[in-house]
Length: 126
Image (cartoon, rainbow, N blue to C red; front, side, top):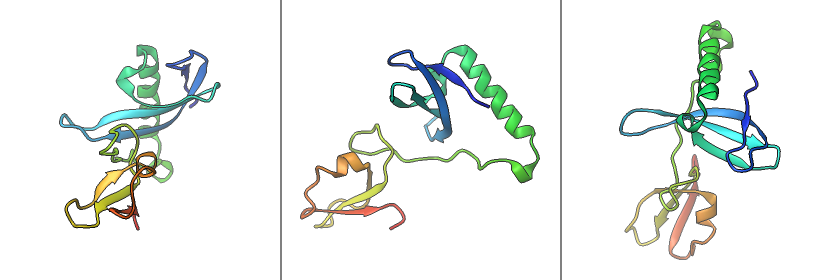
């Protein structure tokens, strides 16, 4: 089901392209990925959407839950955020070469500025 909303930045038409959950102290928080016609990309909590769009998402989740298990898509996944910027999804483990810091999740953008003579950078799963 296509869900079109107004872009949070420029108010042009935008599409919700992905659903996922992030862990919190109060339990999982549902998020969406939004792409607009002007090229803006957002990852935001569903409770930040207007009420009518939240209702559309709830109807879509119910529709997916009612389908037979053989064609049901994978469950929402949990992702780690970068410990440096705490904004983007992490994809790399960063640790200090002297052993002082062991495996902290960082995003690609934050890793770009690291001095690799002092830090070890390993992609997730690597």
